[in-house]
Amino acid sequence: AIFLARRPEPVPGSIVMAAREGGRTLLIEVQALVDATRFAAPRRVAQGLDSNRLAMLLAILSRHAGVALAEYDVFANLVGGLEIRETATDLPLALALASSLKGRALPAGLAAFGELGLTGEVRPVAGGEERLRELHKQGYTSVILSRQNAPKSAPEGLTLHPVAQIAAAVQLVLAGGD
Image 1: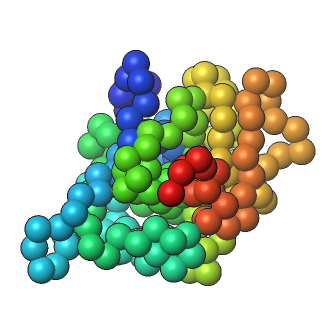
Image 2: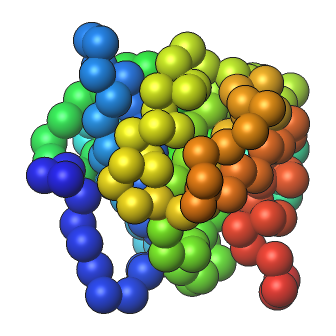
């Protein structure tokens, strides 16, 4: 809970992810800020995340989800000063970026985890069931994850949204507008 900012209302560019560090699951808020660039070359700033991975995610979002960020400065941050290098940050960061760009908050109680491949697929990550148990224990009600990480039955009170492609995940969270 130390790595989560509990707000009364959801805000654009923020989502919780379930990360695995050592043998335990940590819930961490992933934040993204997308703003029109004022310079010739847009800035890419990553705190707690691999900047090369961020660049790759921007290309995946543009190519496979129609979320073009070439004209924008992009800032990404893991709350609490943590540094996480696992690929499970890909999906939540991509969703936070799309949310910030569109200025739409993601639903309260939503979390995500999953790796993104260069062809836009949402890939499974290790420890999926442990991540789901921890999210459920902490009161999250909805999780977007790789189709291959979805168990046959979810914990009671937890709605799973298994996706195979990043475009489906972005559409799921930003449905209802441009």
